[in-house]
Length: 501
Image (cartoon, rainbow, N blue to C red; front, side):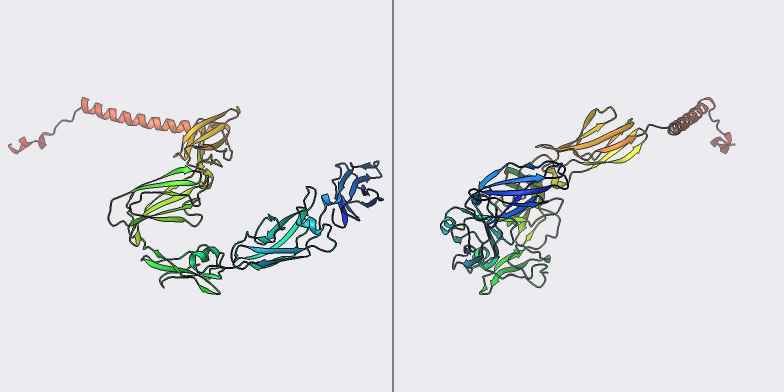
């Protein structure tokens, strides 16, 4: 029920005739009834007051069928009301309270609820921020709402509904825009609470600032192109009142060799949201510390900005928890630091908790010949593995509809079936320590038996090969027989005796 009309919607019967018309009848207790007729599945009639009991019924009539009616629905008008939207809605920033705004609204004229009911629990409220996807449930009986971020511009609108399961949300109010207050003037406080207009990054001339220019409040990272030697950059936050004290970061030079001081690197899952990283390095007085870096990866590259932590040279273990989620592959690396330089380090792949794969390998035919077929498969994408693959299962089914399976080691990339013919259906499943994943795409292959021409060619090849071997053996035997039965007679003219004659 709207504040001026009763609007009803209904679903016509499946076998409703095209000429069917509907009559909505609204009976007000103690008053005469109102009605409207429509060929559409909805209709509206005016109402005089919401604080009354209404009984509603819909009649369907057609030239081809007798008139039928729905069940009668009786309810209080306020239970299913759609209230008119607020007439005004405005916001007030609270001085020295950067997370708070004061929200005020005024009802329209002839609002059906009294001020006492408005100040009680008769209304439910929602706020919608222009940058948010979903509205937020709030209690606007309290004007002061402290659920905002400091120095942030908000464009808000509100709506309400009567506190009943059958009621409907009102239309949205006009949008009001305001910026929350500011406090703090140091960099740490500025990062958390200050009203900033931009960030400023300053580096030596040899550094390419890349996308680290014109940074707004929404930016949380940027990329630099740095030289091989060590450089120092500063980062500061500015607003209309001035600049906060800058922070600085030393970017080490790139290591010029491929050797690393790390001997081993091991990652252990502690729980669903933390990992223990442990490493062993050579003993060297030149090592000044270690840098541990981790990021979400889907191939060989980070899919997000990496997290990192620097520790002293006496540390060989650290627990990481920032940004760690379930069933997500992480690339974790540890590098030794030598003053302002670092070595390549070691990198491993890790999961906080493994699960069964989300997909199976994709099969394809690599070779198909008479009675033989070579199958190869594409590995499961890293983002869908949900853990370390331990083995594969190759399932195949021929025309007898009996499914058989083969266990395939994880390092195999192909498998050859010998002496098979007919139609076969193949698919594969991947396994992790946590379980078995779903089947990959089904590959159907028809293996035709050898034809007479193929058989003749195969027999001819075998005959020629056998005959050639037989000729070679006969030739060898003839040579040996000749050597044993008719040995070579020496020529006297070539002997040394002729020199004395």
